[in-house]
Amino acid sequence: MHSTIPRTDLLSPAPTLKQASWMNGLLSTCGVLLVAGMSLIAVHGAEPGTVAVIDVDDIRYTGELQALSDQRLTIAGRELHRLNAEDLLRLQFTGRTARPVGDRALVILANGDRLVAHTIGMNEESLVAQLIDFPTWPAVRLPLETIRGIIVTLPRSSSARSRLFAVLLSRRQPTDVVILENGDRVTGELLAIDPSSVALEGALGSTRIEQKEVRAVAFSSELISFPRVAGRQVLLTLTDGSRITVRNVQLLSNGLVRVDAVFGAHLNVPIDSIVSLRFLGGRAVYLSELEPAEYRFTPYVAAEWPFMLNRSAAGGPLLLRGTEYARGIGMHSESELTLPLDGNYRDFRAVVGIDDSTGGRGSVVFGVTVDDEPVFTSELLTGESAAFTIEPIDVKGKQKLTLRVDFGQLGDIQDHANWCDALLVK
Image (cartoon, rainbow, N blue to C red):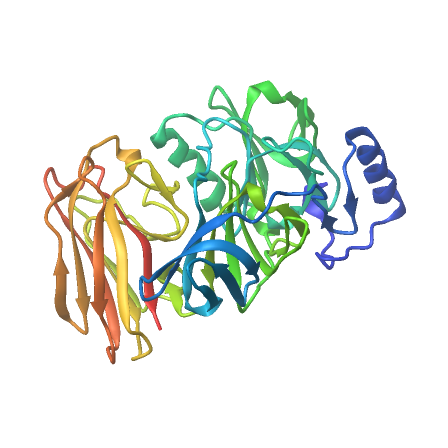
C-alpha cells in the first residue's frame, strides 16, 4: 500500500469512495475531526500570556502578547511594541518549557519536524496520529510522503537515540523496514499500522507484528516528497516536545493560534500549549538553510564523516548539556565547511560544543575563518565542557565563511562537534 501512494494536493485531497469509507470508520471509532486535509484542534486555549522576544540585535522585549502573525507581533510592557517578524529570532513564553521526549512515541517528518504522538491508523495516502500529551485534541492526518519514520519506543540513551534517528533520517532504500526491539529488521512494503500491530508485505508474504515488539518503522526514501515552501515560516515548539514548521500564523481572540503546517494540515493550536516560536525566512538565516561552497574532511585513520544539517555528526538531535537545538550543523574532526556570504550579511553567531551522545567523551578545537583570515579559535572543548557561545563576528562585505573542527586529544574518538543555532544576520 505504501509503495503506491498517489500524489495529490496536500491541502485539499479528494479521497476516493473507498478511502472516505475507511476514514469515516476510523473517525467514528476514534472521535476525531479530520476534514479534507484539515486537522482542527478545536478547543479553547487560555489568554496569550507573558512573552520574551529577542531580535537580531539581541534586544529583548517582554510583556503581554496582544497580536501575533508570521509578519509582525505586538506586545504590551512598559511600552507598546509592534515588531516586524523579519527582525526577530525567537519568542519564548514565560514559565513554559518543553517536556523532554523521554521514551515516548514519535512521528518524524522528512524536514526534521516531529510529533510526540501514537499512530492510530493509516490508509493509502495518510497516517493518522494522536498527540500523546493532548488526548482530547483531534488526531492529525499526515500525508505519507512527508514522513520519514515512526518511533514506537525511543531509546533512553543518547547514543542509541542518535543511531535510531540516523537510520530514519539518512536511510536511502526503496523499501520500508520495521526495526524490532531485539534489533532484528523486517523489510518489505508497509501495509497497515494500528494501535496494536504493524503489517508488512515481504518476500515470504504478509507479516503482522505486534507493536510491543516494534521499536521503529522507517519509510521508503523513494516516496518522500515534502512540499517546498518559500517565504516566512515559524518553528513552533509545543509543551509536549513536538516541533512543527508552520506559516500563515494568526492569533485568534479565543486563545487559539491558527497556522498552516508545512506538511499540509491546517491547525488551530491552543496558545497555552506553545513554548516558543522561532522565526524563519527573515533577516536571521541559519547556516543549515544555505548551500555550502566546499566541504573538506581529513580522516584520522580511514573513517569518513559527512557534515549533517540540523543533526549531530552521529545523526541524532543536536544536544548540548541537556539542551536540544532545532537548527545547526554537525561536524566531525577534522573538517572544514565553507559557505558563501557574497557580501550579504552583517554578522555570524553560534553556540558550540561536543554532542551529548558521546557520553562526555571527545575533544576538539572550533575555529572560524572569514575570507581566509582566522577570526575565532576556541579553547580545547571536551564532551564535558560547557556549551560555548560565540559572540557575533563581523562579516560585513565578506565573501565566504569557513567553519573548522580540529583534532583534540585521543585522535578523533567521539569528536561529534555541534554548531548550534549557527546563523547569519542580513
